[in-house]
Image 1 (tube, helix red, strand yellow):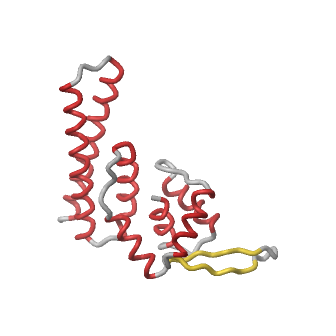
Image 2: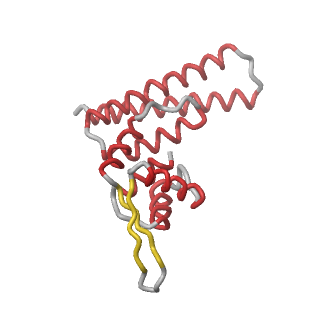
Length: 170
């Protein structure tokens, strides 16, 4: 997911690693806050894959600065990452799905609909699994409340996706 966030920010501006971190935090801090220790290796992978290129300069203070920019390959990779199938891990699904939704403006309407439908199918499957768990297993008070809340959360998320779908088809 870090690669998606980096490419998304570089799609808007040429940035230093500090600038990338700052922009990710400004845009996505309620969903994730990656450290420099996560960003730097991801930038190296993206550079090795031809998705970003670097330009080294000297700052006005005489310190070396490295600026990162997205390449055409990186733009294709960004789109691919947004459109990739949702994760199987339900714990990571909602955060990843919300990040993809926040990045969806860079996609055309058809690709947005594809992404929305993928996310909706996965959310519906997780909702069904949660509802089945509640029916099939006698749960103690707190676990039952947790899973009831999860059911509500997924119903709300599916409703949000349906609203986005409706907006895309108008």
